[in-house]
Image (cartoon, rainbow, N blue to C red; front, side):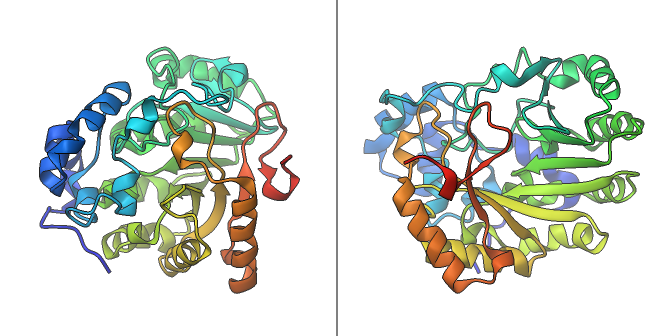
Length: 338
């Protein structure tokens, strides 16, 4: 198993580690031994969507290998600057589902809170890379967002999203949970996060205690795409949550040249399950402007899904889906139009 370089993983250092994140093309190239000839492309795409990557994540990447699957997820590419028909700034039509005050509702019984625009890492395929976070964060209008949820008794589950909710401090996250837990008709609180995968020390003792003491059912949905992301450090960070009964799921994005093979996704599912995480969704790429080069054709995705079903037990096969604007649920791959 690949292990990171000598970066301290002390629990109380996560904010300092996040502050040390690489944020320039020059620093990224120097750190990973990339050719300086690639800098013009790096700089152009970086200008459209800035680099951000943790030391821990960089320690998982093979130095000098421009095709490393973890590097390609965060490496700016000149292809991002090419306009492709059908690839837009709001590919899942968040705007149409926006109820105000940072609340998005697309599906019956569930509401999503945009808690922050911050992430521990900037993934080049991010479907919200163009999202207007400055205008639409729930924490800027928290009392109004909570009132909206409290006044709609049809909502039984709240999804904390962003950005990444674990970019918030333990104190701010706890305050948000306090207010949500005071709403009687909310049964579950779900956190969607990539932060533990790219910064395992974010799972602090305080966070574990707070999640495990919640009066609501807590579900943490990780975002991991490749088996090299599942490390001993991540396993150790997740163990207390798993042992305390927090539901741990994972959703991936199917990405060309990164995880678009049954062998890779099979290994990912096996590794996830070994650390107590159940595969949940494998999303087809949302057609966001700047990410067309990651797209996997539907027929290829169907073949990968079929191979997984033939080799893995059913509970280890993620559901292959696409989010379609205005649909009442995620759409299964088999039900998508060609």
